Length: 94
Image (cartoon, rainbow, N blue to C red; front, side):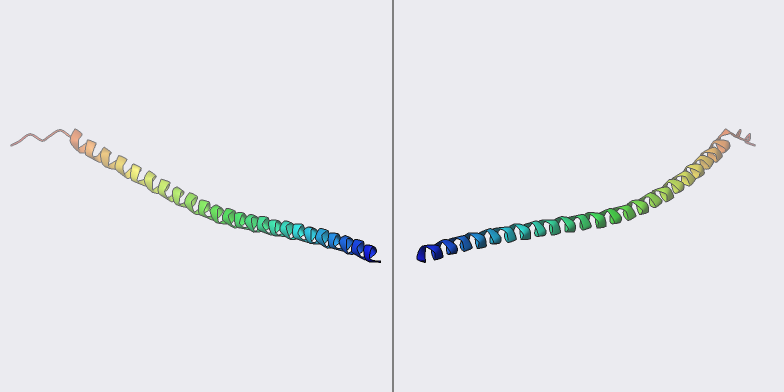
């Protein structure tokens, strides 16, 4: 009976070790999946934030371009006015 008991205990120890290894692998896999899900959520949040920032920058760029166009037109009119004054003949001195 001693040999049978020793054999049964060895098989039980082997089964417990295999179970422990399987549980450990399962926990590692769950942890890795949780880490990946966390990273994916962070990337989604970054994408939303970057999209909003891009929209804001694009709108600001449109405003700056419109202001630059207006300044360009005003400068053009000012140059025209200065050229008009310079092109006038000088009145003769009395």
